[in-house]
Length: 431
Image (tube, rainbow, N blue to C red):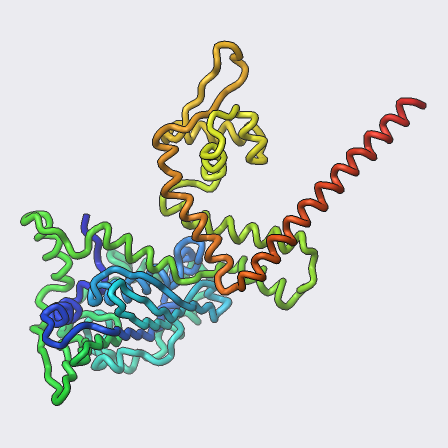
């Protein structure tokens, strides 16, 4: 599998990787990447502005920047700390981020991206645009001006489609770009030099001089992508950007915090609107946040949250009846029946009846369903760790005690209420 077309395919990135690997400048210690664009204000389809549907800059833009620093640093990201920004309610998704990545060998990278920018970082890249063509100063503010003339989301979608390949306003270039494509300002800091990537060269700032590693101009757009694919198919060479590589970049992107509008409304409710609202409401919102976080992680493994609920029970108590499983999961039997049908088709479970009691349907895990435990349980553990990140251990212990006490109080109340109801029915029948 070959993944494309990331900005880490760009010739300046590939050449810098070779320079680092040569060892001539000592070990790579730090990477700095910065890109300021008007990405958020270019014509977008509705899903491109929806965090829930994968919109925003995290998976569309951070993937490029992370891919570049991963290729230069050797690939294996050990830790990610990041902040994201949603600054325009009319474009309600992440439009900016700053992230700090640490790699397995101790190298670290700082990444900053703004899709809300008024400043264009192409200015510090030789006034060359991302696609390798000279930047036109007359087009400053063009994206915002165009968006201001659009009357609806449908009209905006049509505008984007019209500019794409085969669209009414599609205008293919008749000449090759004079420079290589790029993804903003990047510096690789080695022990004995700083390497600055430019669209047509790599600048090497050494101990006593600055020298230039020139790059031949591009002859075919995105040639590096096709060359890597050709080498993989024809010559059997393992691609730099294989399927595992793409998954690792996507995983790093997923560590950037993202909030959808619903979460923002909930947080405003508790911080500003009604901070002393009922605790039952707060527990419900916290529970939903945990569920959403786990759903996102399970989706990467094509496991719906509903299947997780039943798998988790069966990992602990295999061989329950369908009715017992429904009771444990707290759902109606028809809901359980539908989920089990799907899980059986996927090979996670098998159902059987005993000869002595044909009425009960017993549910058993298959080896495939049992094997999912090792893969999925760590995801749930990770969600719990994320949920309590930065909270003192003493505070976490207090939350546990309080929630257990609440459960106990409500259980006692239920018992007392059931007892009172029984007494009332007894009195009524005696009269």
